[in-house]
Amino acid sequence: MDFGHRLKELRQNADMTQKELAQLVGVSKSVISYYELGERAPSPDVLIRFSRIFGISTDDLLGVTDTHHLNVTGLTAEDVSLLMEIIRHLKSRNANK
Image (tube, rainbow, N blue to C red; front, side, top):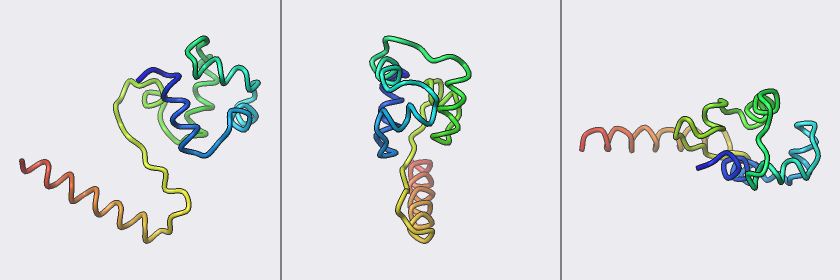
């Protein structure tokens, strides 16, 4: 997945508009649109701001690593704990195949 698609996915998963993300990053809404469409590339400083906003590494943001992130906003600590337990179980089961 390219950077633009990844950025859009992260923004939408965070229930954020382009305008809201632009305000957090310090750019205009149209610049966010250009990034998402692949018409412009962000500077290293802007990449770092994105990674901090979304709580992921710049490698994840750029698609260098292939990891998935779950949006657990609105879940209780107990819910998150249960999800982690399910993930550990699935990883263990798949490792034994």
